[in-house]
Image (cartoon, rainbow, N blue to C red; front, side):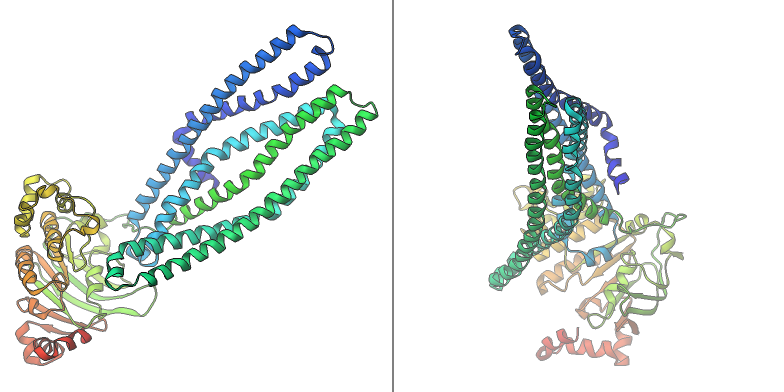
Amino acid sequence: MLKRFISYYKPHLKLFTLDMLSSLFISLIGMLYPIMTRTMLNDLIPNRNYRMIVITGTALLAVYVIRMLLRYFVQYWGHIIGVRMQAQMRSDMFRKLETLPYTYYDNHETGKIMSRMTNDLMDVSELAHHGPENFFICTIMIVGSFAYLCTINWVLTLIIFACVPILVVVSLVVRKKMRDAFMESRKSIAVINSALESSISGIRVTKAFTNTATEVEKFEKGNSLFVEARRKAYHAMAQFHSSTSFVTDVFNVVVLIAGGLFLYGGQINFGDYSTFVVSVNLFISPVMTLISFVEQYQNGVTGFQRFLEIMDEQPETDKPDASELTDVEGNIKFDHVSFAYNDSREIVHGICLDIKKGQKVAMVGPSGGGKTTLCHLIPRFYEYEAGKITIDGTDIKDVTLESLRKNIGIVQQDVFLFDGTIGENIMYGRPDATYEEMLSAARRANIDEYVKTLPDGFDTRIGERGVKLSGGQKQRLSIARVFLKDPAILILDEATSALDNTTEILIQQALDELCKGRTTLVVAHRLSTVKNADRIVVVSQGNITEEGTHDELMRTGGIYAKLYSLQFRDDDGLALKGLL
């Protein structure tokens, strides 16, 4: 872990070196005061050398001005190094998150991921700055002050130094408790962030169902966990600081008693004793700084560990010899494909399905039967365990993910739009498209007329997740996005099921235009939208139970015929939802 942490210093090696050199001079300047104090007490003052007293004091003041400038440099540029390292880690984490498979996001809440990106890396940034600086300065001060104290009276210095092992033992014993407590605290903050993100995203649902009290209760549970976690952390921290502070107090007592005895016995003169009392603080202060730094160290290390947990996640990968999928015609074949989520029971069992280029194939059947899962396997959002899926005869596992997904367009029921303008969301389908190509896509998706009524046109901001648009407008915008992408294969996953009848007709017209010349898979609950499909596949409990055209399936009188008849019985319209 240390090696990986140090690697983030490499781009800032020059600035880091200057920071450490500045810290070195700050430490050395700090050693001047007791040296000059000893000189004054033992030489200049007894000999009444007033001129040298003034010169020495003035020189010390000039050196302190230099130390002020050096401290400014260390404080400013040291933090800049930490911030830049934090930014690099954040960039690395974001890039890593972009490569992780669907399964990772199925098992990790957004708020907890965001907590690692923000809170944890902030503490890592502080450690990156203060860690080397504190360690470097304090080490020099401890070694330098110890050497100087030995020049005054080595026996008294060794007596003082004998207290250090006690301090180290106390630190090691209590540090583990602090580390565990702060890790638990991190997790509790992530829980709060997750609850907050969920509640804010769903605020409209909360208000609609007047469930504010429920959301408050859920949030307070996480808040209570946070309070308890911080209580444990502060309990461990209090133990640490109180016990270590007591040991440092012992230092002063030892200096007072032992120094007094040495002075009484004539083993040390008054000037050296006074200098020793002043100088011993040079030894104790960096020791205390290192002790106090343990808390920040624990925060930073814990944050970096949580950062590494994400960085060490297994990303989506291509085979070493994966090829580019080009000139796609759209022939799709499922050959005994099976799949299960997270080693649970299989959702798809040995599916065999052959879809020719340009065909429109509809998948219908009860909810949870595996329709959407089959569609997610084609762009490899999930990796199937057994069997094979091919496009134009090529195994999709033998091609790069990017080239595979570039040739597949997806329109879902739950449209996700980014906070930005209408034009930016359409251009998401192909960022390098021209403005004219974007306008053409909007026109083909039947959204251009609506956009013309807006004062800012395509520059109109749509709010978070497109909150300023209606359901139909969102759907048409997502269709325009796919028009612009122009894929060979199209997946429509219940694209109109959440719309009213009038809007559905308008959207269906845009979808029909979108399907032309493409191999299309349609997942639908409204069977009226798939009557004209080239083939209809009934998927139930992970198996294909029926297959054929609308007329063929109606004649067989199987599941499809029953579902279709039930859907169009006015008095049983709600019953269908129970089956689907």
